[in-house]
Length: 156
Image (cartoon, rainbow, N blue to C red; front, side, top):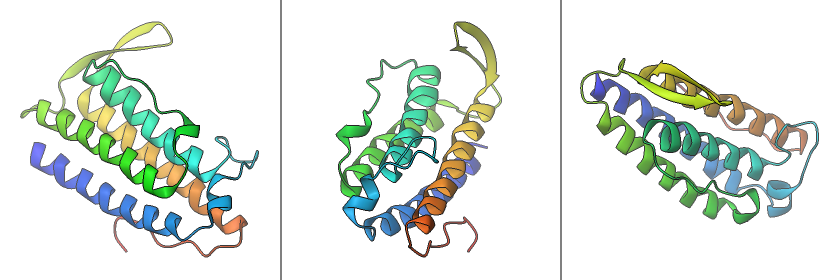
């Protein structure tokens, strides 16, 4: 099962790579410009928010690591976003290696001062679907800025 989850995350990484290469084609101004119609404001902020979600759920909750969450303003260009996702990949590698053969094992998480039990598979699914949700927002925002989005689907 762990091999299956590693494969699935590799597909996510490949899709993310396509997105980050596309983001590198955007002007720096468009990458950083704030747009209130999108929850996190800018393409950069959406990317950092995706990384923050991995930091929170995988780093802090699943791996019990003290996490200094990445501040939006600390990422000034796509190259720095690529570096940020390298740290996300390291967290995910550690998380996936910790699963051994039971991805359905329950772990305790705390959200809004309430502790609950959730399977590691559910947590894994949560961060991946969250990334794809915001990836769609990034592509929609870029379209509104006049760009032609690329296909970032896993099957393309």
